Image (tube, rainbow, N blue to C red):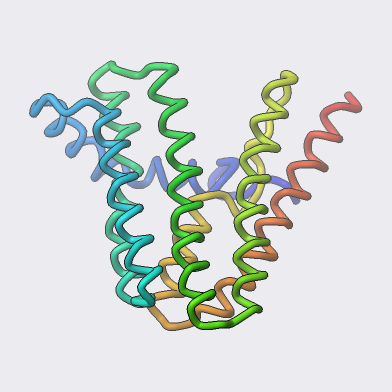
Length: 202
């Protein structure tokens, strides 16, 4: 199954965005009233995530997981502010997607610094696999859309990866979490490749 069956939504991300509207819509109204630009929210979210990556690099993994849970919620607000304020733009969407990739890369690189310092080869290999897999999840969608096909399917997109990483770090389950990240990102890549292949046959 390539589609997530959550009330007819393609991904958990889509479902969560609708459910979170009860919070994000009033917040977006307030932020718009303050004159906050959606791109400012995007840049703020990236800066805070980069700070979390530094915490992870210093080996404070459980604290980093907690901070990630708090800062990742900002990701829902830039889009909400853009929609509410009428300031949606192609550049805003581009900036958001680009910084999402950089944010995730920063988090995994922070963990990589920690793993190298620990002299633990297995986490290093898993982090490399997870980082490459996360890039490929995004690339397969972008390339499919570049040739006129849709590719939003897959049950392990960015939101799921961030939620898992945050929870796993807070619970102290670092190695199992890295295994799941490394494996399921590539499962999602395969899902998307098969989805695009089926579309190409029509």
